Length: 132
Image 1 (cartoon, rainbow, N blue to C red):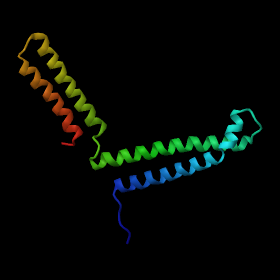
Image 2: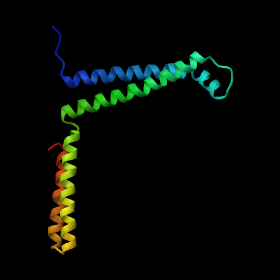
Image 3: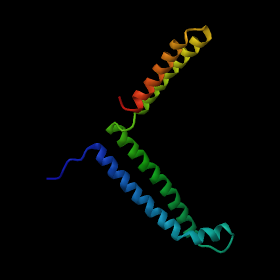
Image 4: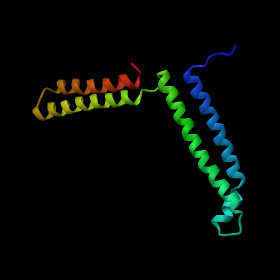
């Protein structure tokens, strides 16, 4: 009986596979670099080889991006990286704290009150970044 893999493990496996495909595409692109150089120098070149090299270059870039996205998703699911919505909520809260601190400064509130307000905003962001 085979082991049931978690979603995070499956995402990391797919990320690994996409990276392998990207690395393979880079190898093909590099193997055809002479034809690309000829193309750029307006020298005789193999049009098919140039198209193949460019296709592999684009595929590599796309595959690396997909692998990065899969890794990021796995990290979010594992709680290693804050979710985008949690970050946005913390930023909105921190902005509120900063606006309050600005009001404190403009109205001449005690220095300690302004410091406390700023520290509250910083604590909200720290909590999200540290996964609390």
